[in-house]
Amino acid sequence: MSVPIPVSDPGDPRLADFRDLMQADRESARPVVIAEGVNPVERLARSRYSIRAVLGVPAKLAALAPALAGRDVPVYEVDKWTLSEVVGFRVTRGVLASADRPAPVAVESLIATGNRFVVLESINDYENLGAVFRNGAAFGVDAVLLDPRCADPLYRRSVRVSMGHVFGVGFAVLPEPWPASLDLLRAAGVRLLAMTPRPAATALAQLIPPDRWALLLGAEGPGLSEAALAAADEWVRIPMADGVDSLNVATAGAVALAHLTG
Image 1 (tube, rainbow, N blue to C red):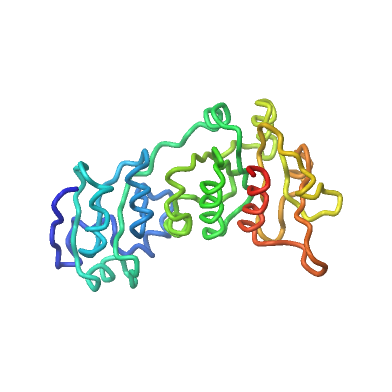
Image 2: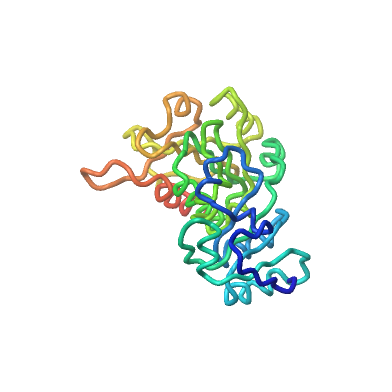
């Protein structure tokens, strides 16, 4: 790791990547990706992403020294008050890193090299999106594929909730038209399993996992669209107590992935 450079002026131009992050969040297609916290920054350092800079308080920078060893990356050391003034809100995790947004990965390459997929339709809640990536990493999913209406997995809040696992789990956006693009998976011998609470669906415990599968998850509330359900090979449900018909989408996905990978 480069020797930390002390900075006391929150207006220092070298800290531009980290300035007013809540305002920066509203910029569409921002070319800079932000990781917050020691664990997410460590995962960023182990990924294919190119780190631009690191900003943090002394104790957190010291904790990151092994992960950043040998990297020629500018590291800026500030106190907690300066850190919060730079980013525009109280930072409790003590350290951030910025990275260049990488070029998109081709959907076809992910499908060709993987066997376990999560496919998301219209997931626009950044925290749910981040949680899906964390679950995907926990259960060994090869890639997450998103329909064109999903939110950006590299949005700061999604990165934070994923604990940085979004940097390690491959992802790509399926092309239009949706859900016809699911045929890319079917043509590769991947069985499409749609999560739905409908009684006609197969109970999860009765599902025998195929060799290659894709778990389809819809937005919390509406769930998968009729078109996506029609495009699936099989419907799958999680049996629940009377009066409860659904779970948080990330929770439901975790339950299903535990069965599929167990």
